[in-house]
Length: 117
Image 1 (cartoon, rainbow, N blue to C red):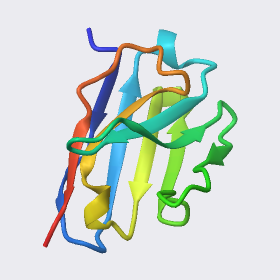
Image 2 (image 1 turned 90 degrees about the vertical axis):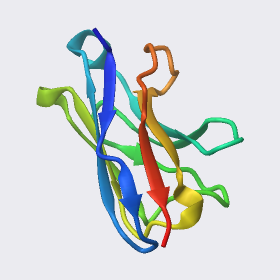
Image 3 (image 1 turned 180 degrees about the horizontal axis):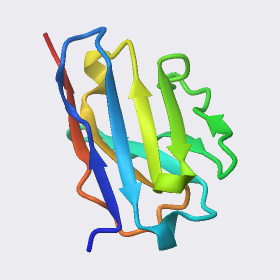
């Protein structure tokens, strides 16, 4: 049984929005800070943002930061983490994954997000 199942990806035009979901088995989710990652073709997997057990988020301050466009949230009762993506750009095209902040949960298959006109 998969420990992490991501869903909600698809093809969207630049400027559009998508909401990704990640369901985790309760044993892996409870009490853990969680994160969204993405991997674009030919590139290494990178951290998108994190959310603490209490709901505090951090998207970093790098040039590639999605701060202001993406929002991570979680529903602890449903063992689910969400990624709301607004103002999507072609450079956001990637496979999106969730995992713990340390990445120690067996990786899911991810969900493909393609931003193109």
